[in-house]
Length: 88
Image (cartoon, rainbow, N blue to C red):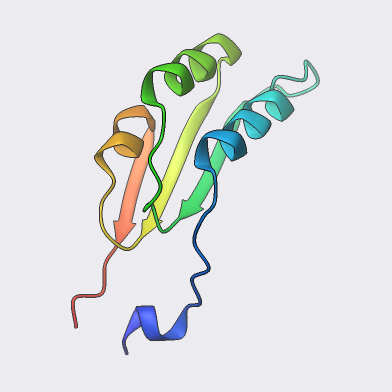
């Protein structure tokens, strides 16, 4: 089955802003583990240097799943990265 035909993409998510909120959320001292899971189509640009610095400062790990083409910038700041691409 064609994966993309079964999903609905709206696009336009500001990944930097979403991750900034996630980093702020997991920075709460009550969290013993700071892991953020991002599921995205990965088509938006990301500010790798500032996000990587914020992740490191918070002691947080980013786990990314891209549904669509690979995003090398997201891959470079993710502790774990995978992508799903339906080439059919």
